[in-house]
Image (cartoon, rainbow, N blue to C red):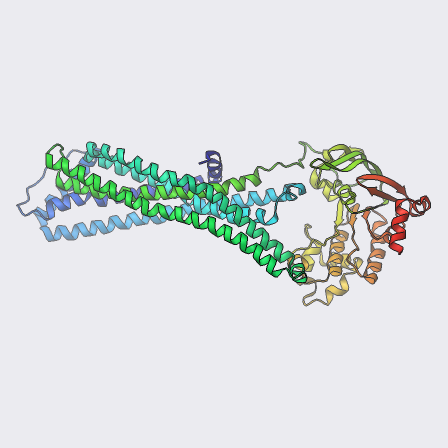
Length: 608
């Protein structure tokens, strides 16, 4: 077991220490009344069915020992039978047992009641921390991870931690206490017999532990394969149109079946090993009980012990009750091994490096006053340079267009400004300060972004436009929608601005989705706009109307426009032509046409 991960899981239990204490208290109540009910067996057997005349027994002196408890019960029972008779004593014993079992189960219920608070609360906190970490991890992290695998870690892996580890906390508290108190009782009855038991039990525990180690390895493999299945399902739903269009239904089905079969094979092995634990521990328990009966019987028959036959029966009854917590403890070990495998996957997310970090005492910035400047900026993915020595100055209020071949670094250049990534060399400044000196929330609050792919959520039209903003009036949302040429089609929807648009806005056309994204950026009213192919999904008429609206919006803003349609950026203050991560041309439209270089060739190709 990797103790580090187990102890880290326990840190999520710490805020619920009061519930843990109450669980401990009620477990002690359960143990006390369990022992009390089992202790009644000896005087019950000794006196109730004794055929000879019952003699009065002297009251024992008080002490914290099982001998005192047994002697006192013997004294009490003998006087009760002498005074009231066997029948009355039988009824009385039955009532006492009933009360004892009532309080025993009363304690069990409330022990579970308070432990539920611990389990549910710890899982809630763990899931919250994983989700919050997902939100702040850089985009580069998700370039290396499948979305389905990340989803599996925050769902099935967190659930497995609850089932396999946090459920085990109940046993971790209750079972050792039960075993300790029961062993103390057994030692007081027969130290020699108990010492013999202590030699046997660890041997059985070692045998069970070997299977647990194998289970942990297979459990982690199983969780990884399940994450692969979730990734495939997520990709299938997202790409269903392409799958159908390319007649790839059988191909996709076979690919999924291969993953499903591999997971089933691993899962079958996990279940077989886990299921083996119960019959194995049952058989080992039977062997231990038989050996104890043999050894204890020999002691009584040989007269080598002060334990009586009735005491031995009581001893065996109490010992049999140790078997159950010992078994659950060993079964819990299997489950913990399985849970630790999931915990390792969860902590890989929580321990992932936060590449985009905020400095202590970072500067606040609420408005953009002068200029943005890229100074000798280099950015790379792995070993490959995506941007090489970029120098660019963007004055406030200017419209800068980025054009060039796909993969030339246009989107990356824009993504560096709100710190979706950090530069590898050089720096980017706003109003003379490195953007890494500013608070991240403030920096991103300066920018509004409309991406090439419309990023919408399964929510209402209103909430998608007002996304991330508090106390937004309906009038403001409607005004933003009008500017983005979206108001007309929104009013024709079934519930207007209260219409649910489906996962990723699938209930809308591509042009409608893009206009909602533009409305969202307009409503934010940022001083800097980043438009990454913002009109690429619009039809000709919608594009014309939106371009007119955006032209008005951008009049008072600094805008960075990434465009393939060169006709949309002819009036830019400066056009930057990127090729293989370098700026190869820059200037106004007419100037670049006159140069007869790459920009001229791109324009001619689009004209054709």
